Every structure is written in structure tokens, then in C-alpha cells.
Length: 487
Length: 136
Image (cartoon, rainbow over all chains, first blue to last red; front, top):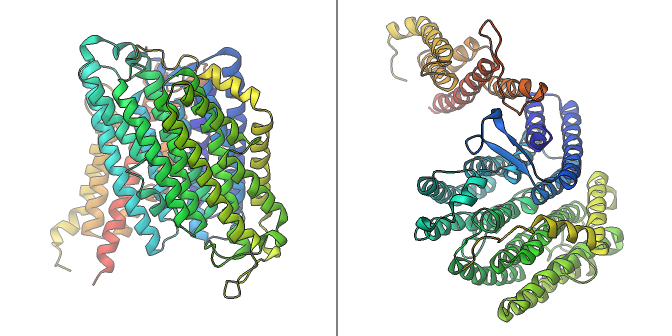
């Protein structure tokens, strides 16, 4: 039952908060309670998985591989816990945000719906359920995108919807063809069925289609244009959940499918994925360098970070999978934290455009410090969490003789430093411009959001200072990855 | 607005009840034969839409046990609850239990699906019809 809790708890919370549409105080209480319960369940689940190994449940007690299976292993249980923590943090940050009453009534069910769907994607152990929950996740985001109710929100939602429908069709087509060729959807059954020699001719094509679908949803080159174009209209705390989690879920699915389920991934697909990863990294970081809106800069950095994750998948060894998993953990936390900080910057300075704000350092020194920590972590400066992720990834790249891949990843790190110092210099360091909006307002400090940022920063710092337990965990989690017949 | 057929406006309510009876019959029949909560729910939506188009949205809404959104939400809640019965007995989620008199958690689940479909789709239909009414 614990295995299903990351799905059932937020689902029930979403239902309750939707039914409480007219009671704002009670709704917030239920919503917070639901988030706390989810966090507790996720912690217990992780303990269970670490102690007893993989936990699985076959719905309705039907025999496998025909039953709908949900399973938690070391990788998915850890990701569920991260999603629950970011979810709780974001909920805290949205509590006193002062959106309109209607927007707030819709916000809670949608946030919990998003958390339920994310948890279910991490736990799904068959392709079709993966698809269903992935779509539910996107539908929740679509709901969040239109909540603002303005014309630009509708426009952003339409762009997002159009692109993700295309990805959905590709995904469904690929899943249908894989089912037709193997007769299975369950991961365990597919693991056995996919290495049969009779499939060797067709499988690369099906897998290619499936990978393309998830690359689209992850925001990889050349299919990333939808991401900065639609994300930047969300209010920053909600953006923290969406930007912190959504594309990372797609990256997780790619790692799971290519590394674990279809471990006999053809080499040509991996080679293509590696080069795509490089271009994704570069285009993301260069796009960020051009922009001045904090949300757009951070959205482009999502794209760039997805490049690192794809690089880790393309390297295709257990060590690379461990590095990818570590990078995934670190990235979810750091990205969510940076978006929350962007939200606080907006609350303080009244604008997201760096050219129009400034002087935040003297007004909010602690926020400036917390921003530096997350920014350095994104860049990968030791001893932050990002350093270890990049270190593991680059070591694997150089050991495999992929000097160009590793070198590009290093250069992208430097460019990341450029955009992060731009936010620092323009937003925090330079004095407030005279024609800017109201200017720093120390009184407008949303304390709950501040608390969420502090907690996430402590987690990031802990991951950087004491990386051994996390590294040991991901190495155990991904020890069996890429075990299929490579080449 | 085109003139309405008085024959249709007079028969809308009786037809609604007939359609609803058919929907419930299909729902119950789905236990062992073709049918079930989803198809039954669609039939109920057909009934509600008939009333909403021939009379108006408010009349159709009054004939439903709950407003569309709460109806859909309680449907989902009922389905989840049906799954939890098995879990309470230590079996996996959605393992179904039967009693001697033919009442089962499968039935509960199907009624949940019925309400979800009925609530969600009438929600869409009413929203679309309302837009049409508002336009001159």
C-alpha cells in the first residue's frame, strides 16, 4: 500500500481541495496536510526500499505481466521523495502569494494533481501507465498555465498544448508499435522480450520514435522552443514546481527506458543522443545569455541542464547512469530553488526584468547569499552539489575518450557562470535604477516562501558537503543499468 | 434563436428519465455482459444534454443529483474508495471483494466511473451551451 501512497495521497488531497472551493482557509489547511502526509509517505517508502529492496504492487491482485504494476526501486523512491519535498516547498511559497481568489481555488487541486501524476510516472512499471500519468501531468500543467486568465496565459498554454500533443501522438504510436511487436507493456516482460533477435531490425526504429517523443517533452534541441515561450507566464513559485520537475521527469523516463527496460539500445541511437545533448546544452546556455527576464534566463537554463542529463544517458554505463541520477537529484532541487528565489526577487523589486531592478543585496543580504549558493551549484563550483554531479559525468566522458563531449560540458559550465553573474550583478549588486518600479520593499517579505528557500538551500548544501551517502545510493540504484547486450 | 418544437420541449423530461433508466440498466448489466459505468455514464450525459438543449442548462443541472464538478469529483472519490476496500484487507489496491447478495466493490467502482463520466462531460456540455446562449 505504501508503494501507491505517492499517487493516492495527493490524488485524494486534490479531490478534497477541489470540493472545498468556497472555503479558502480549510482548503489551505487540507492542502498543507496533504503535502505533509505525502512527504511522510515518501520518506517511509524510501526507508522500506533501502532496507528490503524493490517493492511492487500488482493492482487488483492479477498475475504479472498482465496486471497494472507500480514499483518503487532505489531510484524511483528517491525521486518521489524529492518531488514531495519540492511540492511541499512550493506549496509553502504559494500560501501568501496574493493571487486572485479564483486562481487560488484552482491552484491547490492542480498542484496536487501534478504531484500525484509525477509520483505515478516515477512508480509506473508499464509503458501504458507511464503514458497515461505523463499525460495527466501535462494536463495539470496546462491547467496551471491558464489559471492566470489573461490573454498571454492562453497563448502560452496553446503553444505548450500544441507541442505536447505532437509528443503525445509520437509516444502513443511508438508504444502501440512496441506492443504490437512484443505483445507486452510491462517493464519486466519487455526487458526479456526486447532482446530477442527477431526484433533486432525493428526495435531501433520504435525506440527512436519513443526517444523523440520524450526529447520533445524534455525540451531538447531542436524541440525546446516551446519551453521558454510558455513557462515564463507562470507565477514564479508554481514555475518552481513545473520547471524543477517536469522536464526532469522526461529525462528520468529516458534513463529508465533506455538504461533499464530496453538495455540493448542500439549504439547509433546513443551516438545521436550524445551529439544532441551537446547542441542542447549550448543552445540553452546561449539563449539564456541573450535574455534579461529572470524567468526566461532560468527557463533557458532548464534546457541547458537537460543537455547534461542526456549526455549522461548517452554515455551508457552504470557509472554514467549513477552520475545522471545524481545530477537529476541535484538539478530538481537547485532549479526549484532558483525559481523560488526569482519569485522572491519579484516580490522585493516588483519586476522580473533585470534592466529595471537592482539594489537587492543591501536590502535582502540573506536572499543574495542563498541565490549565490544555488547559482554556484548550477554552475558546478566545488563544494556545491552541482560540482559532484558534473565531476562524475565528466570523469565518465573523459574515461570513454569522449573529449569533445566532456570539453563542451566544461565550456557550458563557464557560460552558465556568465548568466548567473548577470543576475547577481544586475539584480543584486548594481543600485536600483531611477526609472525602475517601486524598488526594494523589505516589508513585503513573504516569510513562508523564504522558509521554503532556506530549507531547499540547506538540502543543496548538504548534498554538496556530504555527497557520499547520495553517491552510494545512486550507485546502488543504477548498478543493474545498461546490463543488456550493448553493440 | 430558432423556434423550438413544443413536442420536444414537452417530452424532454420524460425522455430524460427513460434515458437515465436505460443508463442505470446498462451500468448494472455491465457486471457480466457488455455495458458498465463508462457507457452508462455516456447515456446519462445524453439525457442531460437533451434537457440542456431543449429546455436550458439550469433545468438539466437541477435534474442531476449534484452539480457537474462535485459529481465528477465524488465519482473519482467513490472509485478510489472501492479500491481501498481490498487494501484494508491486506490485499493489493483495487483487489475486489464480493458479498453473498451480489453487492461488490466492483459495483462501487463502476458507479464511481458512471458519476465521473456524467459529471465531467455534462460540465463540458453546459459550458459550451452557455457560451452559445450568451452570444447574440
